[in-house]
Length: 135
Image (cartoon, rainbow, N blue to C red; front, side):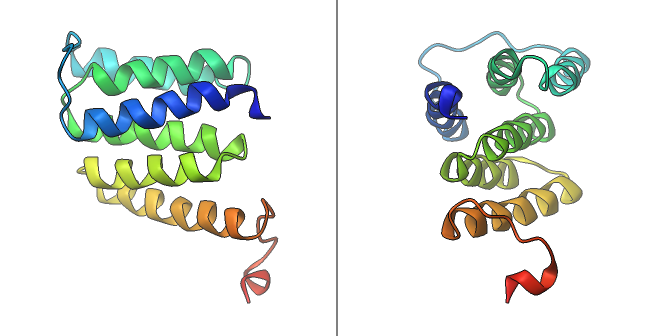
């Protein structure tokens, strides 16, 4: 489960640097349709090759200036980190996705999953089975 910790940590720091505009080595910006297709492909392939999906999504964060796509890539990275049990990293990625995105639905999902990540961290990784478990 912690096999991807190093990759996820580098994603967190890279995503944070991108969010604040660190452009010491500016990546080439791709067309919106290309970034959208690559994000979709990375999500589709995540079960078979999570390491490659993480790298692809990380790359897409830096290859677009579209706030919606930055939010989507960051959110999807958060989901992968969450699935790996890396709740701190997932929480930060969800926060970044919420800040970067212009889509209210994605922002709402990022906040919802942020709550889940924080809950899971506080309860040793145990997700609530039902709403009654939150009490």
